[in-house]
Image (spheres, one colour):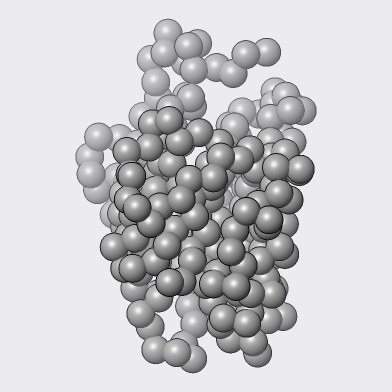
Length: 241
């Protein structure tokens, strides 16, 4: 059975991708900081608890996962802090870079050999912010632009092995990403993407003819509209100083 490693697999896009891959017959090794609220208990869904911002925990994953059968790596874990750059805490900037950029680079390095040997796939779940300026999101956009460039460059480097590297860059997606932010998607379903939409793209990509590779996919909702949270709710959502 082929293995698929999925980070951020306890919720949102990561969980949607993990669920779809399980339906397709893969063994999924889900990596997340906390699985306590994850409702997927499929017998081929392995939960590995890991804080991907911690170097030692990240490196330890290579000893917990069967490399030989690793066919897919989905870098879906991510975090965003949005404010004028001068207002961000240094710890928030470090977390953005560590989770959105450093962790995917290191995981790709740790599992690159078997992924190349198996002519497998790396999916980087980025953001449309990699392509366009993000208001109050300079650090976030920089991390996603770095991830995009890494994916495109790695494909050029490893394409002869049969490895496919696919950047998926969604705009506003209906996940818990917005739970602690000052804004969230509008209620109109045409104003956001669903996690299952991204999982469908992953599934479709996996069924494409061998030899054809889509390296970059931008996904947008039909309409664009964000809503601000009420003032009192903003205070509750702020990260402690």
